[in-house]
Amino acid sequence: MAEYDTDIGEYCRPGSGRIVAAQADRCTDAAAEALAPLFGAQDDLLPPVLCVRALTGELARRVVPTASTGYMEFLLAQMWSIAGLLDQTPQGQSYLDRDFKADLRAVFDRVPYRAPGGRAKYPRLYFGAARALDVDVREAVKDRIAWSWRFEGDYLFSETWAHARYLATYDDAQALEALAAKFETVQDGNALLALLRDLMDSPVVSAGMRRIVQRYVEDGRPTDNGIDGVPVVPVGTEVRLLLQARSATGERP
Image (cartoon, rainbow, N blue to C red; front, top):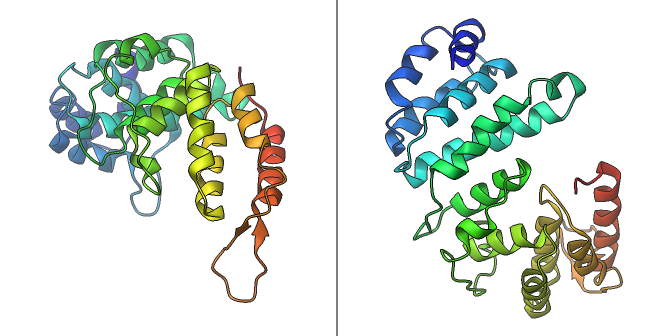
C-alpha cells in the first residue's frame, strides 16, 4: 500500500524502507531479527508512532502463510502493541481506521494457527492480538488445540491457558468451567493471584470471567511480596483491588 511506503519514508529512520523491502516477504526468524531494530530505540529515542503504524501495516499486508513461529511472535506483538497504543487517545484512534485494522485482521485469515510444539509465547500473542483486534478465531482453531491443564508457573507459555482465556472472553461455558476448576487446584496464594491477575489482564473481560475472580474476594490465603518486614496481604484483598482497578479502566464487550 502506497500509504505505508510513504509514511515509512517520511516518519521512519533512513534506510528503513530498504530493510522492509528486503525482509518483509521472507517471514523467517532471521527476518524478524533484521526487522526488530526498526521498532526499537536508537540514541534513546523510539521511532514515531506513525512510523511504527506504517511498518506494522506493511509487514501485516505482506506476511505469507508459511511464516515461521518466531516471525509470527514478532509480528503479532507489533500488531497488538500499535493497536493498543493508537486506541489510547482520540488523536490516535483516527489512525486506527477501518483500512488499517482490516490489514491487521487479515493476518489471521492468511496465516493458519499452528501449535508451537514447545515453550513459546506464540499462543498468548496470537489469541491476545486476535481479541484486541476483535477477530473471532474460535472456529478456525477449535480442531487444532488439545487442552492440557498440567502447567503451573508456566502459564505464560501455555497454549491451553491462552486458548481458554480467549474463549472465556466470549463467556464460553466450557472454558469458564475449565478455568474455574484449574483455580480450585492451586493451593499457593501467590500462584493463585498470578493466574487471577493474568485472567483479568485480558483485552476483554467477560461477565463470566469476573464472576470467577469474584469468588476469591474473601480468600484469606496469604500472598508474599518477598520483602522482609512487609506484612503479607490476603488473596481476597488483592482480588478486591484487582476488580476495582479493572472497573476503573473500563471494559469492551
